[in-house]
Each structure stands twice: as structure tokens, then as C-alpha cells.
Length: 214
Image 1: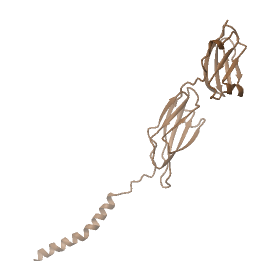
Image 2: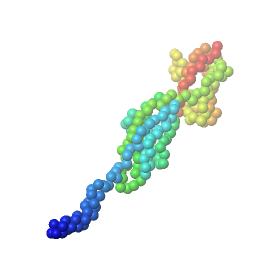
Image 3: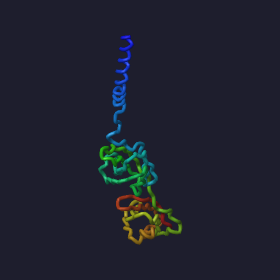
């Protein structure tokens, strides 16, 4: 009888201790796993099309972004552009220099004060070769001049005329030239091949060659 009584007491003690044991286990197995920093926008890619690039990345919840474009290879010190973005997972940058190495990097900016911004995800790319000139038509060429035409939606500032055995000639372009998208290059020599390069400041925007008629 005494043994049965002891078993009952032990059982009651076990029942009373069970809630404390369960609470203790729950506290140990459910730690706070909220990160203190946002993840980087992963899989940053650069899709190049001529002198523009489309950057894409994996979006991050509860974040905006800071996108940086630089005129170098992962140095981010030359002609740096900083572009704030929100609620997007891609962005296109145009009017880049032709055949030039660029760097791009992006980080997620936290919208929650207790969570830090992410580290940067970065990529390098080389732009394609831009050429805004249209082909020179035969009837736009004479023995001493050539009519050049280009995409008038593109900003330009000058044309450089080159030929073998002569110094380059720089021809400034007026606002009117830019609006019409064309310029007659005069004072040329018959039966001569010329190369024409069109610029915006120092940025090359196109190259074309044509030979004058006899």
C-alpha cells in the first residue's frame, strides 16, 4: 500500500513539473533568427545593347536600392553615378561611352531601423560600339563635299574629318545641325577616301567612311 502511495505522489510531481519542462524546451528551440542585415541583391547581371545596359537582380523584401555606375573596373571612382531605386528589380542606363569598361554595384537599403543595409553586389561589363550615322547615299556625295546624316535624337557636338596624309579637321555642330541631324562637309578633295567621326564632347558616337567622286 505504501508503494502504491509513493507511485501516486511521484506521478503527481511529474505532472506538476511537465509544464515547466515544456516551456523550458520551447524557449530553447525557438530562438530569434531575424537577420540584423539585409541580404545582398543576388544574381546581378548586365545585359549590354550597344551603348546601353540593363541591370537585373533578385529583389529583396522591405528594401529600396542604391545603384552605382562607374567609368572603370570595380574602382567606383571615375564619373560615378548614384541612382536611388525602389520597388524594381531591373534598371536600364543609356548614353554610355562606346567600347568602354564599366562597373555597376547595388545594395539593398533597409526600411526597418533595426536592420542594417546589405553589402554590395557588383558586376563589370563592356559596352558595344555605338554608331548613330546613317549610311551615306551615293547622291549625297560629290567631288568636293559629303552630306552626313545621323540619328537626330542623339546629342552631338562635333565631327572630326580624317584622311591619309592630312591633319584631322574638327567641324563644330550647331544647334540647328543637331535638330536636323545632318551636316554638309565641304572643301574635300576629289577621288579621296575620308573617315568621319561624330562626338558628344569626348564621347565617340559614330564612325563612317566615304570616298568623294572624280
